[in-house]
Length: 284
Image 1: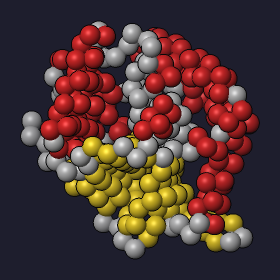
Image 2 (image 1 turned 60 degrees about the vertical axis):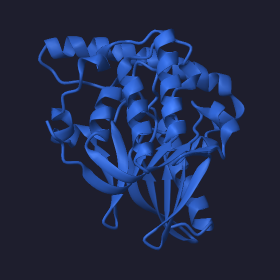
Image 3 (image 1 turned 90 degrees about the horizontal axis):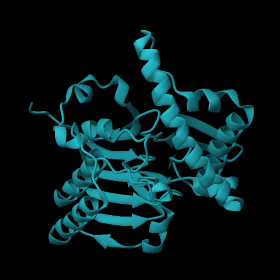
Image 4 (image 1 turned 120 degrees about the horizontal axis):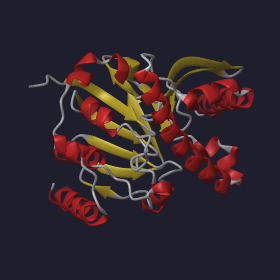
């Protein structure tokens, strides 16, 4: 089926967590096949290097990498903003290859307004002072995803809808809600003090667009969400930012992908695929 792609100026995607059980790579690939962005910003935690030692890398995860490198060959500007789960890439900040650039943050001027884009883990106290605890939490989170799949399988058999255990846990813990509010306010305060019109984050897996004010002014705070629970991104087009939600996109959901996307890759196949993509990037 020939898909007429939506032309958008900027797409911001974060917290994909390729290499984990919770990653919805197939759904992300379907979404990517429906858009034609001029600029693509990968706002951190794209490849989950923390858990990359596991023997889990489905072909669909590789297809996401292939699609993104394909965009680079079409002169789409691609910024890879480092996050905490792919912090290893921070040693390569400043690296450029074709239209790809690895950065810690992006400052864009869009239609005369300034946008400050970064992952957001810099505000996370756990990341600063107890990284081992954060990594332990990541493993526990991935285990919870597996349990969630089993629960949803049973729920489906009983004729009920899907539930998200991780969402329910986060929404029921007052401390978590306070952390999210503090995170958003801190990002907004710093953005206002530096004269930005927009501040764009990821990290907390909460898609959002809202105005935040303090005694010094106001700013539009935005978060691209994630591709674990919310399956969301941010899009800018025709002078307006919006939150994209895969579950509301019937066109993307209708796309049928090749069966090869369901095949898991072993270590040798994964390495060969990565080398192939690297060579394609060098020739582009």
